[in-house]
Image (cartoon, rainbow, N blue to C red; front, side, top):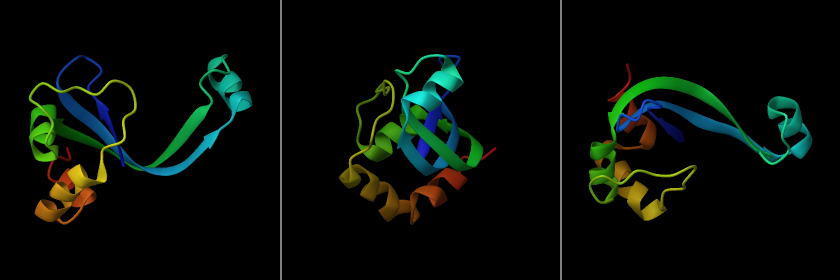
Amino acid sequence: MLLFMDEKGEDRYRYCGVIASKCNDPKVSAILWGDDRWERLVTLAEVRLVSLPASELNELLGYRAGFRPRGAMRVDPDRVSRLVEEYGGVLEFLREYEE
């Protein structure tokens, strides 16, 4: 699962999607963005609009108040297990915040 924060600076996640595939391909990067430095590509499935306050996710995952990830960040499985225990799964949790 991949979450995207609000681009307007609001501390809220606005989109989520299931990672369908990953690859490293500088040629595709050059075609898409005119620059081969962005070679790590991800495709998403089941993209959804959500309204998830970062503070709620931070608390549930055990991050400090005000934490804001920079770039792509993998969440430690121990932190995710808290969410799974309470909601039954990541998708079940995110459904609570779908718009």
